[in-house]
Every structure is written in structure tokens, then in C-alpha cells.
Image 1 (tube, rainbow, N blue to C red):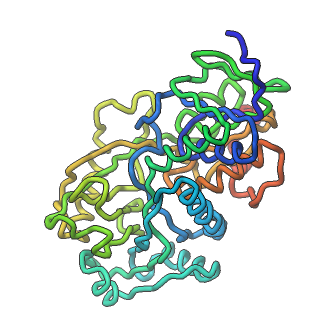
Image 2: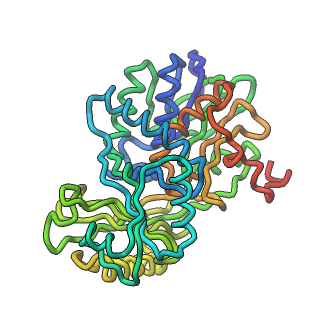
Length: 390
């Protein structure tokens, strides 16, 4: 397998949202960049497909809320460059009991960071969002800036932009070998490439690429059900009716989230922010029993809180999560190979933050000072990673 004569400044493995934004930042800074994807684009085997994602500033952690300030700017800039809408403001309603600690922490973070928000006692919540039934006296916290990102459309826009900026996108090329020398050799099913810097944004396939390089990250790959529920009155849960994105806190063992009807006419997306252990190569295997338990939890929530939806899902799709033990990302260099940068473990909440994640991975790959404190995202925070893992 002969190596290509082109020496790239950077190769990015994985054309999900994180890889696309990384390659986009590299191409914008006139770097010779190659974006490699093992499947033919577009595909639905990873974590970035589907039509919609939530965007929000509301987080318990200050560092995410701070990063989101720049993310909104880059999303708006990308919309302007592409001449197409990638985002719709709907507000994000956090729903929980008044004493819920996470709700209190998020409210404190929004206040500290100067983000516009409203606290809605039960009576105000009923008036503002009559479609939502309060099953146990819940209160609301509304992040006014929250909304919907158009996911599939964004990936197409970014891949087109990378090409227009002089970058190369190669799909249907699975990476089968990485040799980290002075320049990194990347071998695929088609050919070999040379690069000064390699960025791995391979989602659930991350450890498959890292193990031969002597590193195993504490990543858990989950298969998640993406469920859509039929409106009893079509259009009643749309953006035009004032229905928001929402996040249920403490109302089930894991978060429940939802988006207004749009992707499928008359259907509302309501999902469980958790899934079941799954090998990404076997994600199309028959549904496990615990999958059914997840859907039962959602059905119970829909019956109790969204009475104008049918209580059984009309459509179920699949998505992969790649979780870290603490739910925070990994944005770091390989401990032994400084010219290999890793972006991983986005834990089901990375899409909205991808503009800044891509910028950080670009900075790490070019040996620039990162724009943000990366302490929460270092590999070294996992004390269990002893020398045996390196």
C-alpha cells in the first residue's frame, strides 16, 4: 500500500459533527486537511445523524455555558456563510421538582453567566405551556436561547464548506493502520496517507483505533432509542404553537428530553438520555429486553406529562452514545504521541458544542494555546488509567 505523496497538515478520522467542525476550522486556517470516514456519506451508524438536536446554554457546569457563548456565534456564522437556516430558537424548558439539586445548580450557573432565563412556578408553567401536565407539582426553568439544531443539514453544509475551502473529504475508507512516527502514517482500506498531525474523532470506534497505539480510554458505547410520539391533534406541539424543547430532570433515573414536532409531521421527539451497552459493529442486532424498559419509562412520562400525545411510540430509530464515566468530553493529546489528538466521549450532549470542540482540536493539532481551560477534558483525570493502559 503506497503512501500518497501529499503530506497533510492534519488528517481527521471520523466525519461526524466533531470531525467535520475540526476539519472545517483547519481548512479555514488554510491547512491541508483530509477528513476520512469509514462509511459512505450520509449514514446513520454513528452519533451525529438524524434531523434534530437541542441547543442550549443551560448546564450545571460554568465551563460548558461559557463555551456555548462562542458556539452560538460560530453557528450563526456558519448559517450566514451557507445562506441556510441551521437553528431555530424555541426556548428550552427544564422541568423538575422545586428542590431538585440539578435544577438549582443550572439556575445558579445561568445567573452567574448572565444568561437570560425565567423561573416558572407551577401555576405560571401551566399557563405558559398548557400542553404539559404537571404530574407532581413540577416547576420550570426556561433558557430563552435554547432551541433546535438541524443536524443532517449541518453535516452537509460543513462537508461542502470543507471542500470549498480546499480540504478533502474521503468516505468509504476505513482506517486499518496508524503508525505514529515523525509524521503519522494512516493506512485505509484504499491507500496510505502521511500527516504531520492526526485527530481521532471516531465516536464508538475510538478505542479500536487507540488500542494498537497502547491506549484504552474508559469509554462505554451505548445504543439509544430515538422515539417519536403521535400528536392526538396534529400541529399542537409545533414551534408555531409555542411548544419548547424540554429536559426532564429527576423525573426518571436518567434525563428525558423532547423537541417540538418537525421531522415527521404530527410526531414529537421524546427520548431517554441513556441506552444499553452495544458494540458499534453489532448495533443492528435485535432489541434487548432493557431497550423495552427504556421505552416503558418514556411511555409512563408521556402518559403523565404529555397527555395530548399517544402513549406508545409511532417510530423508533437508533443512535450511538459514547460515554465517559463523568459525562465530560475527552479533548487531549495521546500521552505518548503528541502528534495524535483525541476528541471522544461526547456522552450524548456534544452536538451543540461541536463548533468550539472543533476549534480546540484544531488548536491542539497545530500546537496552539487552547482557547479554553482543558482541565475538565484531560485523559489524566481518569485515575484508573495506569501505565498498563499506556
